[in-house]
Image 1 (cartoon, rainbow, N blue to C red):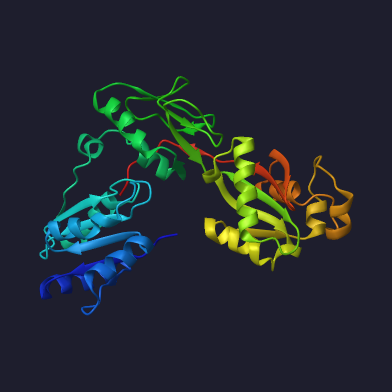
Image 2: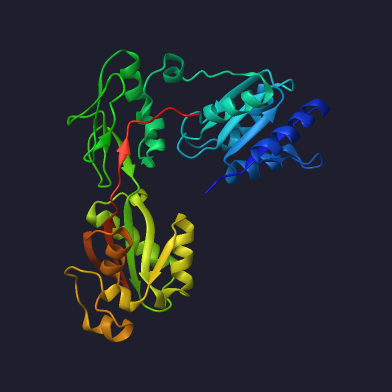
Length: 329
C-alpha cells in the first residue's frame, strides 16, 4: 500500500519549507543531486502523494508522462514557496489530494485551493463515499455521471444491499434502478459499480504450485463465478502452506494479508463442506479452501469449492457495516 509523501522544491526557501513539511507529514525530500525526472518516475509509482513547491507548470509537465487513471494515480499537489496557496492538481478525491492540501495549508497558514465541483458546492461525492467505506470503484469514468446529476440538483439512487447507518446526504437515496450499485458480483448496465472489500479467499493447492498458476486459476474462478477480484480483502489457508513460495508471492502481488489455520482449527468449523478423502489424508482435514474461508470470515461460504490445475478456491463474506460519511479531511 502506498503511504509515503514525496516532496521536491527548486529554491533554497522552497527546500526549507519542504523539509519542514516532510517532518510534519512523515515524508521525504528529493535530494539536490537527484534528477527531477528520476525522482518523479520513482515517486509516481511508489508514493501516495507528490508535493511540488514551485511553479504549477513544472509540476504539470513533470508528471504528465505518467498519468494513467484517477483510480490509480497518486495525489499531486503544488504550492508556492511561501506556503500561501496549496493547489491539488491530481487525484483530489480517490488519491486524497484535496484532504492533503488542507493539511498542508493548515501547517503553512495558507489556503487550500480546491476546485472540485462537489467540494465547492458542498455536495455528496460518491467517490469519496466509496473511499471512506473501503470500497473500490470499477468504472471511475462514470463518477462524473453521478456527480453531474447531483450538481444539477437531481436525486441520485444508490443500490446497496447492506444497511447504511445514518441519514442519507441531500439528493441521495437508496433504491433500485440506481445510478451507483454496491456489489462484489459483476453487474451489467451503465451504473457506477462500487465494490465492497468483504471477501475472504480460501485457498488450497498442491505443494510447489507457482504464483502464475494460482493467478490464472483465480482469474478463471472469478470469471466463471461472476466475482469482481477487487472484492477480495484477505486469503486464508492451512498452516501446511505457510512456506509455499507461490502462494506467498500470489498474495503479495495483490497486497492481501494471508492467515493460516491448523488442521484441528479447520476441522472445528461448523457447517457442511465439500469433503475429499485425498485432501484429508494429505492435510488432516477433509476440505481446506471452504473451511479456511469460513473460519476467517466468520460466515459460511458464498462461493463453494472451485478446483483447477491443483488449486482450490472458495469465498466467504465478512459481515460489514456502512454509514453515510463521505467528507474528506
